[in-house]
Amino acid sequence: MNNVSISNLKNPPPEEADECCRKVETVEEYLRAVDKVYMYFWGSEQAADTLKYSSKVWYRGLKDIDYQMLPSLGRPPLNVDYETIYMSKFKSKAIPYLGSLPAYPLSEGLPGYWDWLFLMQHYGVPTRLMDWSEDALVALLFAIDINAKPSELAKDPVVWCLNPVKLNEAFTFNDIYPAGYIPNVEENEVYKLFGPNSYGFNNKKPCAVYGPLNNTRIIAQKGVFTIFPYMKNLVEFDKLPDSSQYLEKIIINKDARKSLTEQLRKYGFNYAQLFPEIGSIGMEITEEGY
Image (cartoon, rainbow, N blue to C red; front, side):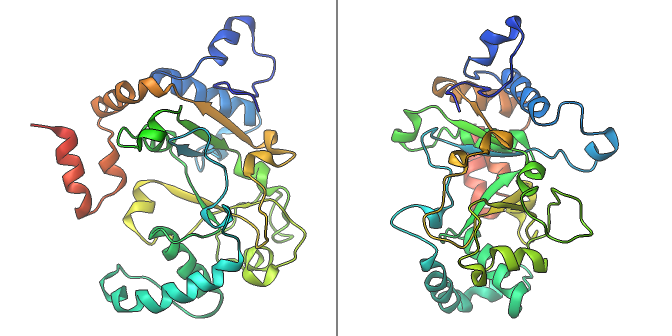
C-alpha cells in the first residue's frame, strides 16, 4: 500500500489524481475519501436494500500511521500463549468488582470464554481482538485525538477502512450462510476456528465478528471487532498477501488535528461522547471551556 490518502484507488480520473494523493485536512475531504473507499470496495455491487441494514465498511482510527495493525496480544514480546495466563489472572482479580458492573452474562463454557475475553478487551488487558467502528466519524475522532502523546502528535494519524464481508469470504461458518457472512462471536463456528482449541489451525487471517453490546462504550462507538487466529507470530493485517482486497487507509495531516476537532465540535460531535460514563464528564467540561 502506498502512503497516500486513498492508496489503492484504481486508475483515478486525472482531475481526481491530485486529490487522491493529498492528506486529509478537513471533514469534507475526509467524507469524500470515505466515499471513494466505499466505491473502491463495493462499486455498484451493494444494492440499496442491503445498504440500509449495514454500511459494510468498518473503520479504525490510529493516532500514529506507523502503529502496527496487530491486536495487543500479537505485539512482541507477547503472543497467544499469554492469553490463558491473562484470562486466569483477570478472572481472579476481577471477581470482587463484578457486582458493580452492568448486567453481564458471565456464564460458563463457550459463551463464558467470549464474555471474559471481551471484558478483558474493555479494561485494557491484551487480547486477540481488534476494535473497529461502523461509524467513520468515530474512527476520525480516535485518530485525531489532540491529547495524544508527543510522539504520536509528531506523526500523521490514519483511519483504516475494512470490507468485513470480503475478509470473511475466506471462512465457511455454516453451509446455510452466504460467503462473507459476519457472525456473532458466540456462534459455534467462530469458536471452532478462532477459539483456544483451534491452535494449529492453518489460518493467518483475522475474522470480522459482532460482539456483545455489553457496555455503553461499545454502543456509543458503534463497536465491531476482528479476532485474530489462535497462533503465534500473527501477521500484521496490512501485510497479508491479499489485504488490498479488503483493507484501505485514509491518511490525515498531523497539522490538521486541532482544526478537524473544532469542525467536529461545531457539528455536535466530540471525543467525550465516545465514553458515555461519569469519568468523561471532566473531559467534556474541559473541551467546552467556559
